Length: 404
Image 1 (tube, rainbow, N blue to C red):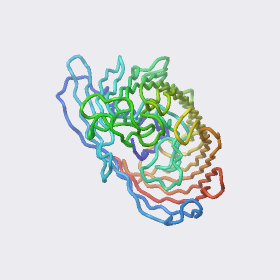
Image 2 (image 1 turned 90 degrees about the vertical axis):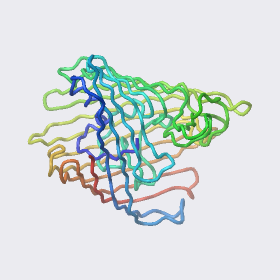
Image 3 (image 1 turned 30 degrees about the vertical axis):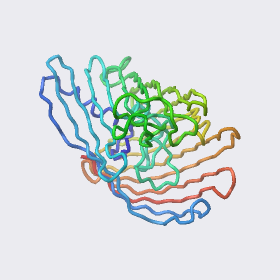
Image 4 (image 1 turned 30 degrees about the horizontal axis):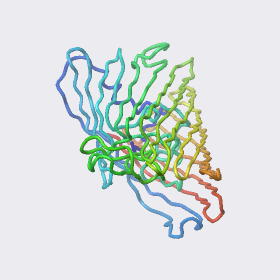
């Protein structure tokens, strides 16, 4: 899930379907085969940050973000494609294996993803186009230079938890041609489980978006104190439904997205009550073909969620952005863009508000196939109740990324 966006394409959400779409390219039966892929991003970051919140902040550093992907694919005689992916972190983490999931698909029926991976809300979304790789409301680097991550995923997304995603056929409904039109996705996560290294029911912080738990050794109980949410357990029995509509009208591409999430936050016996968590999102992108392979993308989105955590009761967020790209992902293509993100978090009980404003601008250059260089800057304003904990930061980033 922790993937830096390296592709020049403004259609960020399409990356989530790359493996599934590739499975439709061949229907001839084939034995299981393994391929290796991944990404490697190295960058240098600088900042000018106030000393109120943290007194020991350094002003510059190098960082990297990398994964190695092991992809499996086979095709049965009846045309069913069975594939899968294991994503290995290329540096030491407590969560060393990022995602691992199996894919069953047929182009005329649909796709099922089973295992540890992002939910449909993280794979089908269209928000503001990414101006600066790794510092986006859609995809972020593990080592973002921003003091506050501008990501617009659900807080209780249960990304990487064990679950199932179902998508309608890639031959979409109501489209002018293959790959256009409406697609619907549904996710279900039964218990917020990801980590098999510990006994079932043990606490783990490895599930991104919502506190998760280990599930090694069989079924575990649904009570007990877990880090991250006071007086409650993991997010379980969670459903997410998403939809996007992709179509081209003349020289304008239209990409629409919406999703709704609902789940069950389990309470601790004698210390809290079970609660329902839910949220919804909407977003859109317009891609204007301005000739010569160049495009201008305008986009934005909105998210609202009842988080019900120890520190956040409700979250609302907005994004808007623009990006100009000279020639897609071809060598020599140049991209320039800007993105703005605003967020409001309400605290439990007091309903005190914490406001975030993040502006980023970036310039990218396609050095070669799969090789993208970038430079950019951003501004973070974080206003919290009590001026002593406010954060004001200006940052800069210079980097290069390779996908393979």
